[in-house]
Image 1 (cartoon, rainbow, N blue to C red):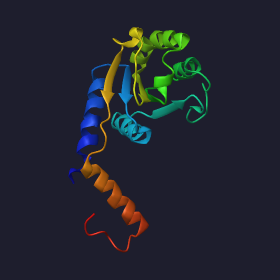
Image 2 (image 1 turned 180 degrees about the vertical axis):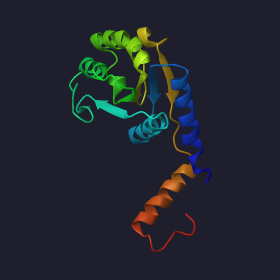
Image 3 (image 1 turned 30 degrees about the vertical axis):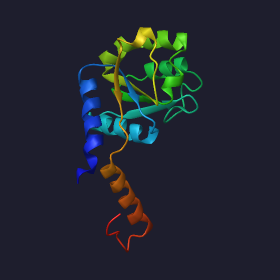
Length: 167
């Protein structure tokens, strides 16, 4: 149906940013789950694993690099194979001077390894040092058609025997 339109556009935009060689992409969205799904989908299309990192959990799986963004980046630096790293709550962490330096030192290495970082958060005030280093995009709110698709799927899960005629 037409319900995939918005996500499809966002997927194409993220794909284009990565194809253009951005090693750091800032993805603004108030819906972390939806943003993560988008990043995971694009990583899959590129044939790469999506490794998520958060301050609390570190790199999933394994948990390395929890506690600070600098520690997280150092854990990522130990991974040699191509990957897309999804950094959660990154908008809160980019004002850390040490992490910023580690990140900037790390970017050329990412390019050689075919890796990229996608920083997720509701709104980013990028430090000056990163303004030229980061591709930026926003994940728009879901369209009515997407929402309707989601409601239908939820309703079918709840009562599979009686499909809703019309919402």
